[in-house]
Length: 223
Figure (tube, rainbow, N blue to C red):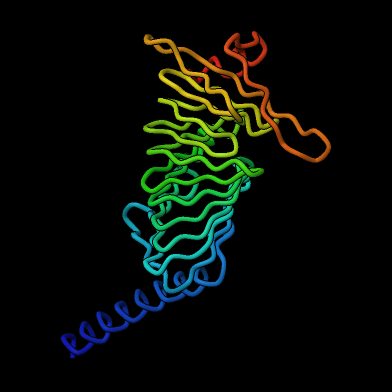
């Protein structure tokens, strides 16, 4: 009789554990709001109870209210309050619309990092690069690795964008073409400012090799 009781107790415990896991999955599957994070899953969620990491194998969408970033991705992993990782990503943020192979957000630092087939579109400007660091608190996006741009047309080792006003700084070895003239960096590298302006509804960039102290100060922490 005692053996039967023990088997019944074991079965009941397993059923309760399975029911608890099911309740957690169902509660999270619809929408998971956190302190600064809202997640919508395109399919089931996988929750690792030992690490607290949630995986969306079929992807979904994420809104991070701290960084002002929202994106859709084919695959997502996140740990509430710590990080978000995603692949096959399309991001909408203050810096523009970004597509990339992978994105990681460090939530405590309000830092977004992206790499792989990276392309940014913003106010007619198109930037491609190997990697991107977006510092949401300062509003500065840093592009690295074979950076190219169109409208305006440029190439540079490193490009910094102030997302609040559209000003751009080319750093290192660079070239910039506008109309019939081209500006290139000295052999040892240099810096070129492209100050964003809108004239009669047309976006233009005022280029200067003598970078203003005000622009240099804004970008100095990320050079």
